[in-house]
Length: 427
Image 1 (spheres, one colour):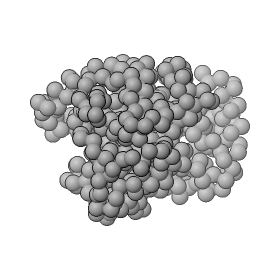
Image 2 (cartoon, one colour):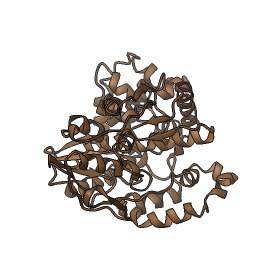
Image 3 (cartoon, helix red, strand yellow):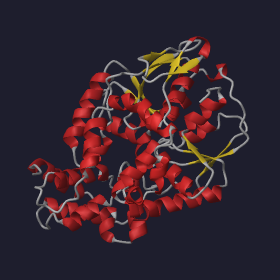
């Protein structure tokens, strides 16, 4: 059961909400559902009622909490600075701590096993890399795409639609590289040494977003920064935190604290992970946890690199975590602008609302996620560009799958990946 301290925290923080309604037009679920109970102030009122014992914790309460994307757009606009992110996490912990008889939505056995066996120990994903690559190259998953069973199961659909697995590269002399299965502990700087950083790999990203991780190492090395990859690092814990398991999230944070303890700068390539790392203080108060785009815009050494021109329009998607929490959404535009002849354009009408990915939300709440994705796809279509860049792997995969299903030939990639290509990195 929820401790009295947690209940008091919910009551105290929720009492800061004055129900002004400024958050309503910024809430994705309120916009599509038009339900007060699916708005920030409505959810806050429900949390207060449950924590104070005035209303029951029943299936309707669970439904409204589960529908929240945790995009924190409401938190960014709130005049009273209500810590909504903390409130929704506490409410979900309350739900998760109820007896089995309570009307709560439980995870499937398959999904729980995957989280326990892989996300809690993501190094195992590195060991599965070659197997998954072999299966994809043999096209063994293609026939599953048309299966009715897979179409109805969002988790299986996500697995069969994973992008082609790539491999970490081993930096060698004179800038040459070779694909390997495991990450090197350190990637030495090239040319004049200007500093050193540590790179956070993430869990799913180390399989699905190797291109971005490789690109980050490549660009940082070219600018004169040595990149350390602590091999004992684990998942950031965001999925566990937002699904009501703060104990697991805290355990992962402690492991990451140990892995990154000696580094002063920790780089994240996924904004969702970056938020969790920052708020859990994975390396203590002494470390700077920075999104890759922000770090690169403050880095030195640009005068020593050549960047090939790209006369193309690039659409820029701003992930909720980058925009609403980190407040770093200006940096991807600035990073892309380093490429000569490029035109960086905001995703018109699409950057003030969530895309619907939101961690595992697209699996848990597919109907709402698809409604939000539709708006993004329309914005991409109107943008008429060949490239769409975004700084969060979950958003990237969600939108890439949507574009694929709509038959739209738009490449979705991280801004640092596009920059690395123009600097000479061969994929």
